[in-house]
Length: 117
Image (tube, rainbow, N blue to C red; front, side, top):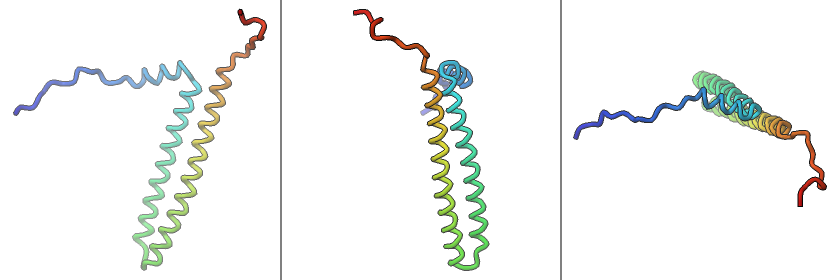
């Protein structure tokens, strides 16, 4: 059997055009998306640093009791950090929703007597 050398005829996605269209359609949603992505990247980076520091601390342990202590501190800190991060994400989404609702409000109100019957 010979392998096919035919390449896919679909063009790769143009991510910049997609981002531009989302920003033009709903700037509040685009800002929220960027805020979420940057916060996620910041959190993952911080957690990876914590993981490396914990591994170093575990390698320096002299007995099993020290290992258990390091692990316990690691899990407690991780739990607190993940809880705080969930709250940050919730706050970002809440403020984005408030912005979208504010943008959706036109400032015009209709009276009941102007609706045709």
